[in-house]
Length: 429
Image (cartoon, rainbow, N blue to C red; front, top):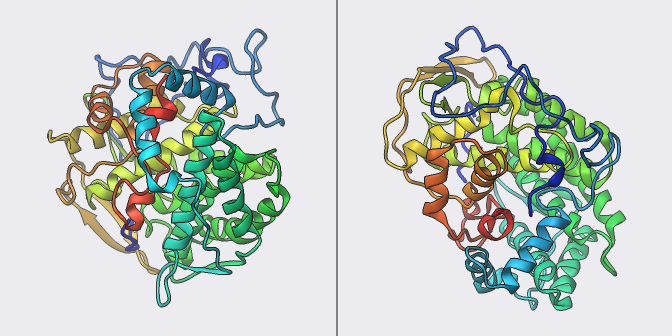
């Protein structure tokens, strides 16, 4: 992932009856956004007939104030489905499993290389040690939940314990905020899987994320590294939002969780949904904020927002459906262009630096067009399989990247580790 600053389950049964509370609410478009209507080919939630919430009688789900565990990217029902499908050799889960076991990070012999200080950006960078170990811990945890092999659980536990007993600081230039966001939400998701496993020091891990990752997440969303509020691209906000949301779930901290949800809806930075998808176009398309930058980052946006929405969904909050499924329209736009088709583009103007100097983009960028990330299965399975909505471009992109791999399958650099991956195995319904 480039770091230049700039604008910058088995189906969840409580959802089978409809949307969560607060979903299907029509939010007025900003003055600069023409409302071009709902595309005829796509069914969208009704704003006038909201479906039952998770607390409606007859719909199961955690009561407000009580978090479900495990309850981030994966619920226990998801692990049960994965295990059953892999045992049966069912398609496409088996193909996803094969990608997991072929990945060197999933080996139970992996040994952690913790360090007290992680540096991303500037001199002395060593952050690959962290992201490689996080992905090894996640892949071993996933392997254990599906196979039941304790050696993999032990490996994941030992990696988590090694880092929580060693790490005291994440630092560097502005990129430290990317490290705190991306690795914060990924690490915390892995700890959630291992919650309750013999020998895993959950309390110490909580202290680490609260004292090392959260302060940077919090500072970025409040201060944006002392820059103009529009200076940083959407992915900077999104990774820090995802980290705060995940930490809130892990630590049963409702205030942190709610803060992340509120930022998604009404935040001032570019990670908020109305800023991340600033313009709507005909045909069910929503222009993604980074589309004029390059497609490597334009595809990162849906990947991070998809992870955010899935974690929120598993706790009873439907951000997928917020503002008439605006996120889906952004995904359709990104997918369509990266599949080689043309898309409309509205000139995007923002303020940069500390003095908010005005800059503009007048066309969608062809840089890195066709960039593949292991994120599309999650988006496809929610909108098409859970909700029954039309998402032709997302559907085509999910088919293109199937079966999805994970960290280590998409190159050795940090961009190949921006997602935990393996969506074909974990999110196919």
